[in-house]
Image (spheres, rainbow, N blue to C red):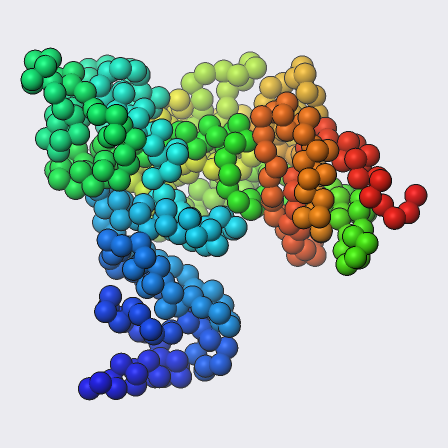
Length: 460
């Protein structure tokens, strides 16, 4: 009996069995990764049915299938229920993984199943404080609470009263009975930014209010992340620049050659077309609705407000998260952030006549290829790329570490003016399947980059 586990492990590594089931007790010392020295080198899909309380134990479990000398990296699937309080376990593990760095920071595509749940961060603490202040009616909420209508303050007030009572029952809201005699209350300074305590106490609430509170917190969290991304302050590691068409323009320019290694630093210029044609949008919707899998709210929408004399059109279809919808725009394709159904209906109205939607979609698509969303009178002119489908992108690739300080100096004025930081990006050309990784250079700073590195070149 003592050798049963070793025998089963050998059957798995020899490709006689393709499913291995291990418990927490068996999560130490076993190597089940796609080792190049064994027969079974298929990519591992590691399914975790229940996250442990300890982040270190979770990392120990993940290490069973992710080791050196492997033919391919594993794919992790972490399963847990839709109760808001259970996000606590994922949040703790995600924070621990990000502190290690390798799995979640160097490549934003690595470990996405957990890094998306790292709520115990500076953004999570700020989101929690904003939510508490809104519930205590010390400030307004930046998002509409789940299940409420923006034009109906009664439903919002009812939610706030219910949230106060819920937080009181788990000991987060205190003092209103003793000092105030009403539902105003207070939350201690220590609890205002204690995300772990909030997620832990959520487990003591009924599922309905538990999920609504967590959804409100997650919505504020996403709102802060989106603002940081727009402002250029979000550190996301290596960012993939995606587009429907990627074209390399001209010959890459060598700006520096390392005298020791001979490695060169090269400036690449690409033309990206992120726009979505009407034909592509309709095919995406048809694919979603194939087999009756689509939602009744899937379809094309028109904005209720005008911008520069015209209304915007979008395609919305339900995502894997309940009441959340993926948004596709004619100008920039699929949005980074999914939109809640309440926000979708608040800002847009569904289009019943496809001919009207097609006309508006094609107008917006054609205009976005020539100018940004701010119109032709934008002060930055062609340098502004907000809402522009076709744009020029410059990437400084190759040996960039020896020039990191020089790059910062050359781009300092541009970065300071736009309150941004250096961004490392990755781009793939579809024609020759070439992958380029480097620093994104704003169009307005290309000339200064070429001038700033001219003294590094070993030739005139």
